[in-house]
Image 1 (cartoon, rainbow, N blue to C red):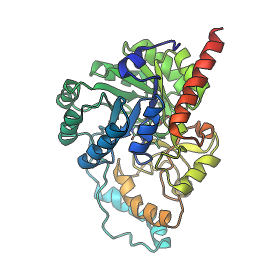
Image 2 (image 1 turned 90 degrees about the vertical axis):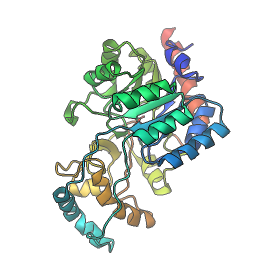
Image 3 (image 1 turned 180 degrees about the vertical axis):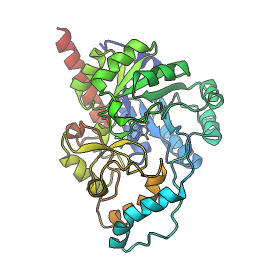
Image 4 (image 1 turned 180 degrees about the horizontal axis):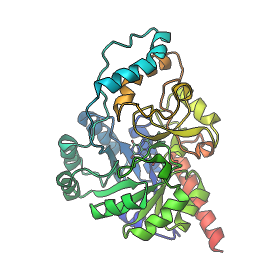
Length: 358
Ligand SMILES: Cc1cc2nc3c(=O)[nH]c(=O)nc-3n(C[C@H](O)[C@H](O)[C@H](O)COP(=O)(O)O)c2cc1C
């Protein structure tokens, strides 16, 4: 009944729907629930230690018999620049004072580490059916090991040029991530946010440019969006924001309230939360210092300066410094168990596709 079965055959899932990996917003619970509903569950590992990632995968394997995607960041590490860090702290100093914090106190180093040999050992040990990457691909030797472990490899492209690069460097599936998407832009061959195409423009052009199956991502939150992705030539959809309000996500209560009230114009692309462009609902720090600050420390160091503020504000139930990652279709999100949501999304997409065919 699906117009394109390539992903279903590759993933061996019931539906051509991928629960997007969402670092910081979810763990094994959401993966299990979405997989039980028939989607490909993705475990975000960017913020996890090797031990924690192993523990999470074991929980998933014990609770559900379904294919699994392990997701990693593969950015190039940039050493912290003391002058930029100091300027950033200076910029944040009024907030530190307001919360009674000492801007000069040392902070633990940023914890968003790129995929490395130790994580690769873990992939070889656990053999997830799929491994997906954000910000390009790991270097050739590591990628060869991932593929030898039997994983199919996916990565996000935000332009046609990136999609071609990913295919040429070994991706088995390309995720076309349009500008509507929540969370970090997967961009890795450009730094120009202004050039980033939206999903509707990006997907058909990526489909024309590569031979591997394309997964559409960004702003897809209901059956209409999934049907549109197929109409544009995609073989499936990766969906993040629409799952954020499921009871199995790890979004804390005040952030859930913000997401429930957000509208089509509530999100913007910002670099001040981590140092890399990402789409989020506007929070206080973005509002007061501006969503884009050219001198913000490079990824992930901007997050380090915000960490004590985030912790102090969250203790008071405030999201002033919390990364409220979400895409432009946040308004379409529903508060519903993830298995049920997955089946509802698939059912609505199939109904829409058959109506359009008739
Ligand atoms: C809260 C949140 C966290 C995200 N974290 C990751 C991540 O850890 N790894 C990744 O590859 N993509 C991440 N993304 C991006 C998603 O993979 C995907 O591109 C996006 O969710 C699709 O757009 P949508 O949110 O409009 O559905 C994140 C997105 C959100 C909303």
